[in-house]
Length: 121
Image (cartoon, rainbow, N blue to C red; front, side, top):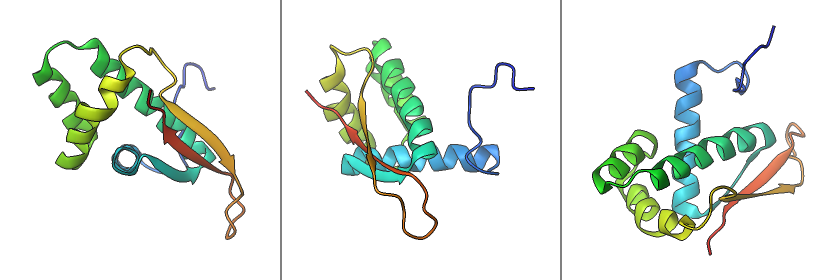
């Protein structure tokens, strides 16, 4: 039974592998502004990124914001970009921080692909 299950497993990945995958996708998204990934990974990444941004927007102390971002984003340069450029542009929004665009299927295995972009004001 699937009662109260709110996460996808993203294949047969274990929990630590799934968390590392999402963290690396968030880091790449912050560094480059746009990434291409599969549809299911994009869906999970959207949920993960939205929760991250909204939790940082709800905290008031700068030290807490840095602590939250260090738990998710790998590199310090990406953390700096995230806290100084990306998060301040979302102060007026409550959700809808990413834009998902369906693109052509991947040629090797015909997997559905999406392009994720960070929306900025």
